[in-house]
Length: 143
Image 1 (cartoon, rainbow, N blue to C red):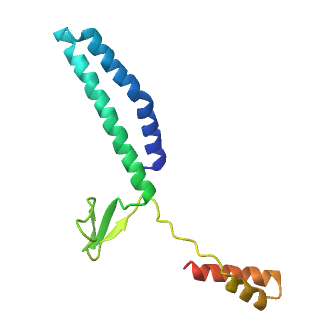
Image 2 (cartoon, rainbow, N blue to C red):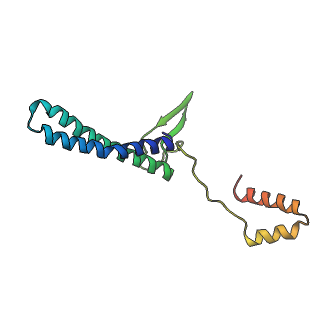
């Protein structure tokens, strides 16, 4: 599920959960002594609990996405691939690759003072310095 969709669903549920809880409370207060209305009271209570569970599940899914945890694991299998949605018990078995909903972020590696001085020393023109800087950054960041 995309991050934006999760955030929208979470916001909608958070905005409505208090109303559902209040409706359940009011229905119990009004109809608590009427056996024919117990179904409505019970239904509202279940709906309120469902809202709370959905909010918790969406918050966990959002946190999982933001942490960059894998959502599945994949491995070649003869004519295609096998996909596993439950996490491995211990380490990921050999040959299985993790799939992510968002790409994992790599740490950017910048130029050191030594790199900067080397570029200054070796380039006479600004254009050369720019090209050398780009080349050095690509080398350091495996691009």
